[in-house]
Length: 263
Image (tube, rainbow, N blue to C red; front, top):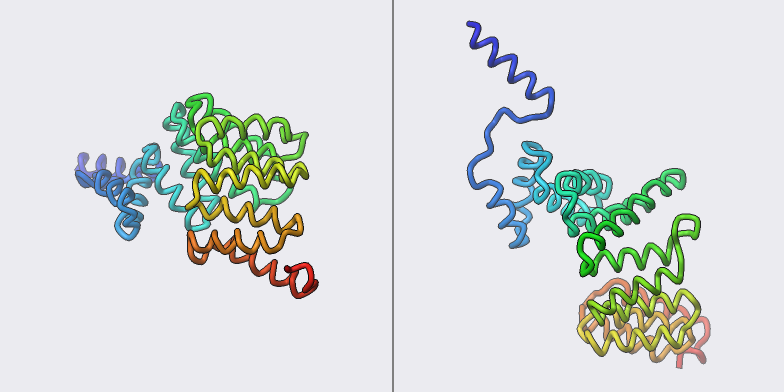
C-alpha cells in the first residue's frame, strides 16, 4: 500500500514539473533527427514535439523544432525553443545564430514597446555567434542587416554594416557582394550597389536573390529594361521566385504610368 502511494505521489510530482513518466523509446531521437535531415517533416515533427516535451533541455531537438516553427511562421514558439537550446548549449555558435534569426522574425510581430528588448537580445545572439565561431557567415549577415536597419540608439550604423559585410565577403564572396551591395543601396550609392550585385550574379549565377537585388537597384535608377531582364533571369533560376515576380509587377505598373520610360 505504501509503495503504491509513493509511486502515485512521484507520478503526480513529475507531471507537476512537466516531466514525462513515460520512458522515451530507444532510438526515437535518432529517428527524429534522421527524418529532419531527410526533410521528412511528417515523421520528424511529431517525434520532435514528443522529445522536446520529455527533455526540454535537448539542444538539437529544440533547435530543429524551433527552425520548423520558423518555417511555419510561428516565431514566438521558435524563439522559446531555440532560446532553450541556447541555454542548454551556450557555446554553440550555430544555435546562437539561429536564435538571432528567430528574434529577427519575432521582432516584426511585437509592439513598438517590446521591440528594443528583442533587438538587444538579437544583436547579442549574433555577436556571441561570431565570438564563438568567426566563420559563422549567417551570423555576420545577421549583424550586417541589424546594423543597416536598427536605429543608431540601438546600435545601428552604416559604418558597422559595411564592416560586417566585408567579414561576410571574406568568407563567402557571393553573399558578401550582396551584403555590400545592400549597404551601398541604402546609402544611396546606386552605381556602386549595382556593381556589387553584378559581381554576385557572376560568382553565383544560379542565385535568384542576387538577380533580384540587381533588378531592384536598376528599377530604382530608372533602368527599366535592365531591371526587367534581371527579374526575368531570377525567375528562370527559380520559377515563381516571389520577390522577382513582385519586381516585374512593379515594373509593369511603372510602364503603365509612363510608357516612354519603360523602354
